[in-house]
Length: 269
Image 1: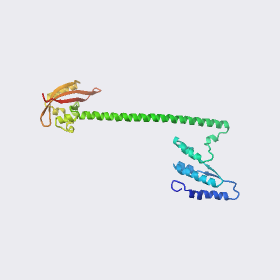
Image 2: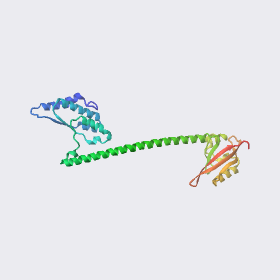
Image 3: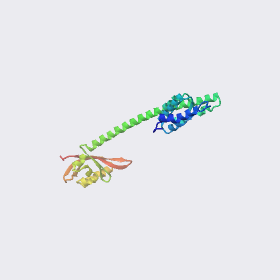
Image 4: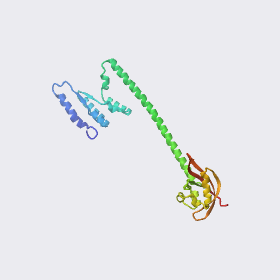
C-alpha cells in the first residue's frame, strides 16, 4: 500500500512474485489463490482501495494461468446506496456465487424455495424502501410547511410588537398590585420617561389623585370595563397631564393577569 491505495509495482513484486515462483515449480498442475485483503479494506471503509486491488489481481490473471477466489461479507452491503458498489465488485469477477444459505440446500426444490424466499424478501424490502421514501417526502413537506408557518407567525408577532410599541396612543399593562408591567413609547414619552424607566413603577406614582387610581384598580378588580375614564397624571417634570383611560383586565383561569390600558391625553379638558 502507498497510503490508502495499493501500489501497482509493489503489488506485482510482492504478490506477483509469489505466484510466478509457484507456477514455475516443477510438477505444479495449476494454482488457486484466495484473497481476503479486499474484504479487509472494504470493512475499513476503503472501497476505492479494495476495487483497485481487484484490478491488480485481474492484471495478474491476464499474465498467468491461475484461478482466484475473492470473498466479501454481505454485511458490507447493508444499505440501499451500496447496490452500485456491489455491482462494481461483481463486474470485476467472471463468476459470482451467492451467500452460503443458497448453496447449503440439499436439493433443487429446496434451492428453489430459498430463491423464492429471497425474491420475496427483496420485493418486500423494495416496497418498504418505496414507502419510506414517500414518508420521508411527506415529512420534508410537512417540515417545510411548519417552517413557513413559523416564519409567518414570527413576522406577525414582530408586526404586532411594532404596532404596539410604536402606536401613537399610550398603552400599558398593570399587574394586580399596580406595577407597570409593560408600556409603549407613546405613554412613556407623554410623561417624560424612557420606556425602561417607566416600566416597573407603581401606577399610583404617576397619578395625581390617589382616589382616582384606587377607584380604577378596584373597578378593574371587579372585572368592570372602563371607557374614557378621566384622570390626571403627573409627568416627570411635575406638570399635570389631563387624560382619559380605557381599560379592561386579562383573566386566565380566574386569575388576574394584567390590565389592558389605553391612555389618551385630552389637553382641552
